[in-house]
Image (cartoon, rainbow, N blue to C red; front, side, top):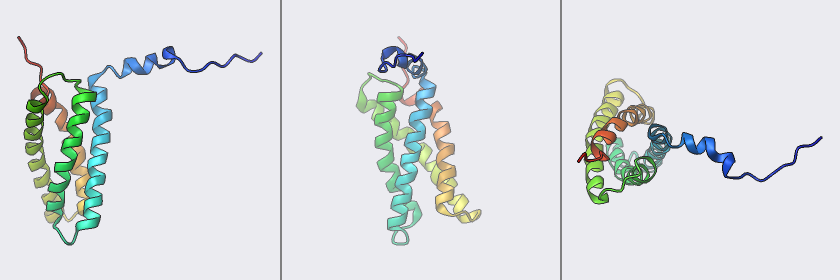
Length: 147
């Protein structure tokens, strides 16, 4: 006997919805998307602008574009923040400036000293920075004030 097919309803999505309640999982999923988008921006800018501009300038351009997109995604989808957006935006940029300076140092080290291609070095550096940014954003950027 054939079972009757029914259109997907709300009950079908409950396990996924419950899983999505985990802030860490949301951070990983959104972070992977942001990291991939940032890397693709770097790849695109690199492909278009090098050798006209050095890869480090391309990295700076990519950083500015990627951080703004990342902020919106992190604020809305991951941390679901209701705090003052402009204050969090400033903290987000400050946090990412520190992370970016570390990334730029490692990128330069891997390219200039180790001899890696900039696209490979950027992929490795992006993954490392993405992993450490959860701690920074949880404890600094989107921290909840305790009364």
